[in-house]
Image 1 (cartoon, one colour):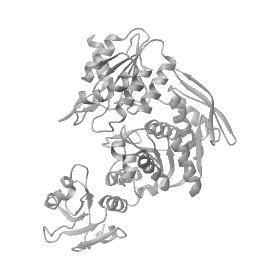
Image 2 (cartoon, rainbow, N blue to C red):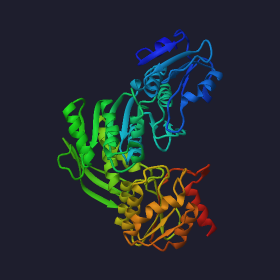
Image 3 (spheres, rainbow, N blue to C red):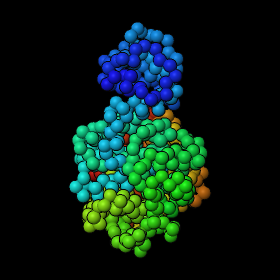
Image 4 (cartoon, one colour):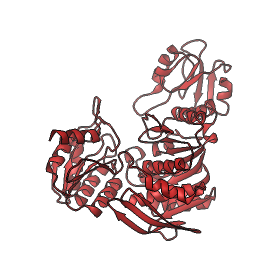
Length: 488
């Protein structure tokens, strides 16, 4: 593709060198540069891509896009200075991969909790309907049944557009995306065309990045400037109500609200029945009154199912197919996943790593637990520290025993993180133990468990690794539970 065509419309400050060049690849990683490649130098939080320009040129880059004014390092190289490299990267990627989101029906899901589960539910319904789906999210990326490893909930702009292009090549009908607040704030999804946008909720998370709830909310709200068919908003959530008012003022696309408590919502769940086996409810809306059920317990499952149902209804999926798909939905990996332990007690693994997420899961367990709840959890390092005592208080409030342990400590001392959690749990007078080694903490919970107890292992869910200060180690909690039980 010709460089002049690629950069058309990009906010350029200045350039040096020829624009008449054929470009074969674009990248933000100097190590991945190859012949006839554009290298995009970006300022990161820990490293500055401008420092790697010489390496990029050595590896074959013939064009450098950057924010700083760069001296000519080698003749024949084109240097293009832009105001914002991340925005330029997104716009270049869309052109280079030929606007793939416009050739798919994209569904974007944003919110603190529920994104992964909702994406799975929507995908199951659409596949039951005979459509081919592609999914991008926390657990990984899928095209049909093929799995592609992911490093972020929402990929970098170039990786995202490349993957969407692959969806187009493989004749995918629907692209289902978890859209993180980071990706919205950092312009990773800039220019993506979403048919439907979904807002689940907003609670404390990522304040290390966004600093305030207001910034966090405004980042999430950006998604709804990118939709063209419909918006679906949780009307029970205070920030959802605020978003509804904002979207109503714009009257850009039809917006539908859903809820359990707010009678002004377009769709309401009523006659909710929750057991340890799942939930059932009646969904009411305009010209609609239907009963649905799903084999995943918890009030959060009602919200997740409602969202997926509304998407399906907007896409004209027959109700009989929606019901069948929901009833056949398997457990989402690491989301309230009950492990088959063949023990007189139960073990549940869940990704809950926010105060709201942990509270929802523990409340659900409390609703059916016949004996004690033993919670094993910690908090991630290099992340929002203010949520740590809150997590401790929630764990202590809804558990009978807590074992505080390491999560993904990253560059922080695991025991320092635990010390931040302790004030919260100490307020509740709930018995607790501190076992920094996560495997040993899980082992201790299994050793202590009695008949009809429920052990919750929270925080990592689907993750099969643990991020330590100087390395990442294999850590699959499902396998670890099985191994510990076999050794007992």
